[in-house]
Image 1 (cartoon, rainbow over the protein chains, first blue to last red):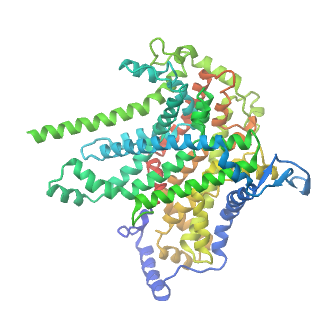
Image 2 (cartoon, rainbow over the protein chains, first blue to last red):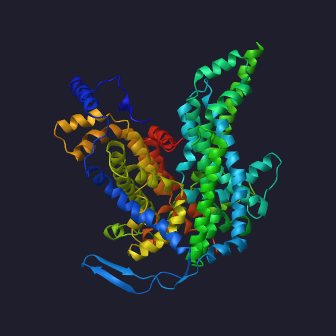
Length: 341
Length: 293
């Protein structure tokens, strides 16, 4: 989809094309490099970089700093203030800050609730990501079949869930999956019966798995479908000549060709599931046992904003970042092979 | 003959898979639309037959929702002289997402242009340090951002949830990738015609990026539309966005399901319209987010 203008086939106007040719020649003669106009690039970069530094880079670094302290709340005295009448900007100290070194990190090792949240998150991850990728791949293969009509309509409809508001959809799932909800009703029709989606430790995790899978499968399917459509047709023809059946073509042509796309989907889904927050929050509001569904981000949220232990929450944050990064690198190494990432 | 039969069976199977998946996708969305027109008792339990067709209770549910939620938006309610209720939250969400998207698009395309089309010192290190922040789960920036905002005196302002992600790493990455495909000679010819560098960017480079910009707009709009955790901690009730307003209907004692259904149904409308108008960009928007491999 990138830059349709990169094609050379259709010149916009002959005059412009002549100019373009002339300068292309001139540029090649003089220099192969991009223009070095001192300052200009920085001017273009500045607005982005200011916001990036203030609201992204600084908080990231500040979290590292905070993780070595215990801390109880914002406030304290104003050091100085910029007062322009219409604009008042006080710079305040942070009160009750006490340096504790690595103690926040030590505490992680014995924090049962943290271990529990970690376990829940990994449990959900291990079911949700493979399930979703399998379904998404199956749907992508189905849609990729040459005889399928109205491909655009199917594709868009299946991607509809990501446009549903996150909190709204989580709440609706609570209703659909309650003891006497529509899901259990439908299961009852085929003789399966009523599953305690929220009250049982075991099933409440699968409620989250189901909800997340519903929301994100279509999204990943679109990515996989685009990957499938890039597989060179000759490879299938060659496999056919060798007498490969449908399954073998999938196994020896489709899967290897799709590997980089699958890798991307796996890494982003893993990161996404590690970030689960809204779904478990609302499921536990609906009565699911916290010990079974509390995810790591939910625990960090509770630590920071209900207990107001910001130092410890910052340490938790960094452990999570380390885990997610390590896992991404591991997936890239394991799945990616040589051409990975 | 057997070959033809097998081929037919495969077609049936393929369509069956697609049909089942589509049903599973559509039913919860359809059910919201049905439930918002029914009294709570009619959709909460299916001890009896579940209702699958809309009823006539929408006005009552809507009135109940308006009575419970009261969200202001930019003082519009004072001008109008009546409370906006939940519609205020929809207004806030649209307002915030629109301002955010416009601002972020501008910043990202300018910075992306700099990275794609100029040589300057520390170009690579700056770019990769920006890109590295893509791995971070954004929810976890909530703590330091919360502290930062309280120090800047920006708690309970729109800017508090517009500014932090305006410098979007994904946005700059996409714009840089796409702007690399603009022929250098095109920009050079504009310079020869006497255009300033900003005119080169605005008049020559940007117009060739229309579909990329549309795709990125959708990614950014949906991102802001779905933000929940940070608005929850930073916004007061007068500035609630849709997700926060809905979560407010989930009380400790009672969950107002009839009202949530109306809220959920109404909140689908704006995004559905966006979806409808920009459908082709919607798919390319998803793909644009995946060009990383």
